[in-house]
Amino acid sequence: MFLSLENLKVRYRPYPIGIAQPALAEDTYERLIETFPPPELFDGYDTVLRPGRKKYTLSEKENPKAFHGFIRQSPEWRAVYDDVKSDRFVYSVLDALRDHDIDLGPHYLPPARRALKRVKDLSKGRLSPDAARLKARFEFSALPADGGHLSPHTDAPTKIVTLIVSMMRPGEWDAAHGGGTDVNVPKDDRFAFNQMNRLARFEDMDVLDTFDYAPNQAVVFVKTFNSWHSVPPMRGHGSTALRKTLTINIERFM
Image 1: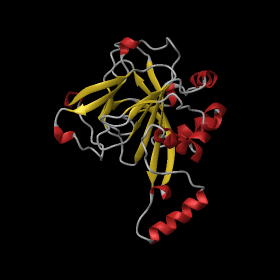
Image 2 (image 1 turned 45 degrees about the vertical axis):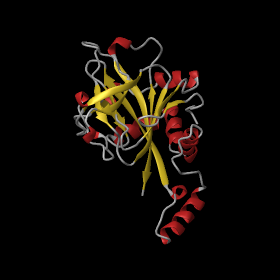
Image 3 (image 1 turned 30 degrees about the horizontal axis):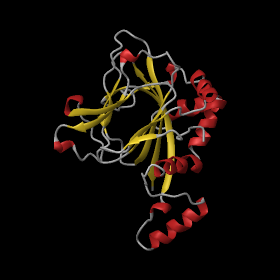
Image 4 (image 1 turned 120 degrees about the vertical axis):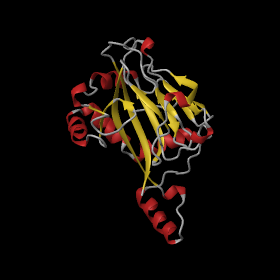
């Protein structure tokens, strides 16, 4: 696959989260940065009715027409799209996590065998992990250095794994702006269980760790009932810089 998790390093508490660097071959990474979609294709989260975030997005979920139009005209990103949509990508990520003692259950089966197993399992009133139907999708994301943020959340319950790939050249981002991904834990036990992904305020959370926004890295984490994370408001007052990422989600569907 286009993304490498060979150098993945994981912390296991309060939920599995880690970082892989470098995440892409240097020449591939350079081409993808060079061809990253222009800002005018993005929608703000206020436009797509997603509160609690100051963020711009281009995705097949929120703005599919612009997203697919861009993918069709970009050979570099079409190759990424085809890779991410493949079983090979999905199960390679699950295998990489399994190598770090994080077993999420599903193992690869050819589509025909998986469909047959699903039919047999459903006839017995249960569904084994290997019969699960999984898919992956990605979005282009851009947070403005001047106040961009993602409020504390745990991700939608359909998600299994999220990968956040930084998209910037060395020296392109001023670390003083912030932009790291915080690992959060609630101050109040009432927020401890959050399977359905309600948003919280920054002041409701402690920060256990921060994965800095750095070139050619992937932050990888597992969706759990307590996978709280956030990007606190960035400090680039007056800056026009954008914290650009490729965010990949592996999800379970019916």
